[in-house]
Image 1 (cartoon, rainbow, N blue to C red):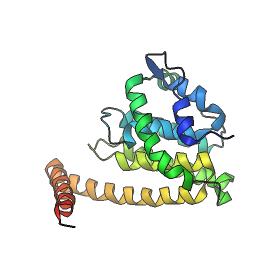
Image 2: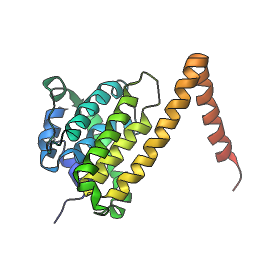
Image 3: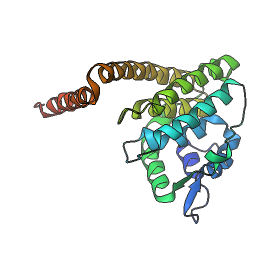
Image 4: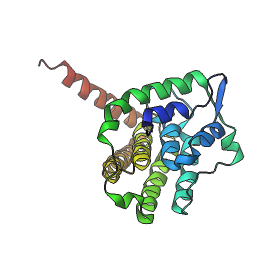
Length: 216
């Protein structure tokens, strides 16, 4: 019987008697499933609404490397030594996996093999291009704007793991939205500085807060 995505995520951390989890451990545990599950695991620190300061830029660079490997047609991921030895604290890793699992339980019944183009060389290379673009956005030093591109990479990982081309297309739509958001933020940053970006963030928070306060 095939393991669920949530089970595979939990298995990626290896034995629970280790204090920290190296990226090499994760790669070794997901190697047989290729890039999909690895993209899911490594995108969690930035994709989920949990504190993960300092992860986005180095992991963005790592995703660029993985995306280029996918573009080159590799079937198994490889990490340079500086990345392979990078550690995640087990409490943080387990918290991230636990949060992702709660979301996956809701969506994994909707994900299944379809739109077989995703398994073709073109599909793999197209997804790798999207991963590289999202990873490049993650490396930009713009605070609090990395969640959406990381979430796109996570969803692409889900689609690739389950060979679901329709799900991957949905992730690409979210990627287009991410590019639009970054375009607006960069324009405001160039023309108005960080004060303009903070004002935009306050406006967005106020907009959603006012909607939430409306009576049902």
